Image (tube, rainbow, N blue to C red):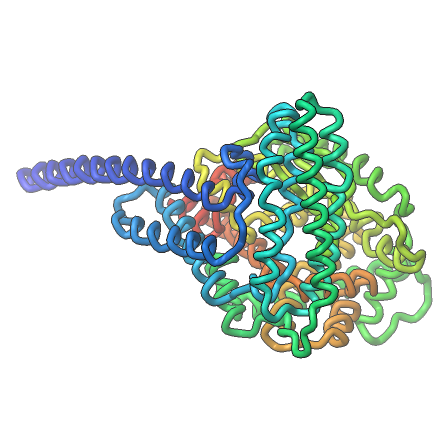
Length: 576
């Protein structure tokens, strides 16, 4: 035995060294491939490159015709072939994740063009206003330099919209309306914003004249596209509903969860029942405080609704909606520091702004973060404006985002939610994880942050705050139920709004807005609850394994250090 053991160990050491060498060589080759891949990817998708801070192709605007479609499919096929040359088992854990992300992205391209074909039925796919607005507002280069790139890019705008018209075959009514709204709203970029910047610039008179001419042509192209859509005759428009087969496939590519769409639907259904029970307990606890000896309704949902409506009256004024958000951000940051929940980089600015017009019509609040190539850029908290809203609609909206919910919204969107997570993501050593960020992880983290903050004592454990948190969390899981019910089970608008108001306790304006959102998006609404479920379950598993050694701050920072990778891959890396 004394001879066998050393020989066995020697063999193991030799095998280990050989394995490390193979892994090192494999990783070196794969790292080289990733660099080539991402450079080529940006040449195929220049607008996305611009938005993540890679500005080599700023002057390029791809015309969405059949030639461009073929270029994308050829790119996807060639790179899927390239991936076959790598032995996945010889790659490091980090590179295995990058391999999966690249593969998923390439297969998503094929799925989108060959099967989903949204370019034929979703006119809102075609909108160039956002990328031009970004180039104007972000100061990554001097104004003159940016305007020269803009001028070259503008030359293709008329051809872009002509190709869009040729692509559209059977548009849905809902996506047609959205495209009209967003393009008309965004056209101010060419009608005013760009012209103002040209006048402030140091360009020559000839350069200014050319830019102004191209800007006017772009404005005309955008306006003509919107007018063309308004006049488009379509007796039997395609349903906006995706259908079970496409829905399942899109869920797999977009969410990249360990769960299937059917499984997460079942989990959300069960969780809804549990949350209703928790809310009933809190309402019974609060009832004497707000209603004295008044008898409680026998229907638990009616009782909960009455309490929520009573608490929802406490909200900000419509003209103070944005300013109140700005005021709360430093308070959230102070709480995170006080409780030592995770490190927040003070050098990364967060700017609260009115939601740009080209983003209108989908979400009332969102984050626009700088890409990994532009890490010093501003992160914007986009806040929907209530300007011009009818008084009753504005009041309904403000009751939805009442004193309690607005704080949870700010946790979700800003600190320690999206803003914080995206700052960490930009620090990830993997450019692949940064640019192909998984939406379920990103949204899931923001939803997890809400729960984690209340667990840490935010809101002083007041039952009112916990009740409203559960209402807000109901919205997250009801997003999943709504999305699946509408796109797979053909739920009607009437039934959907009734479900959201009665079982999720949403205001009428919020429910109607969510219907609009589910009618112009697919699968994305499931990302919140799916990501949250996977993150929360991972944390609880680690707490059981590590016991007293578990450190919440360390878990948060380690989890976020992997970039915006799917949770199922982060789980593998953390548990190794």
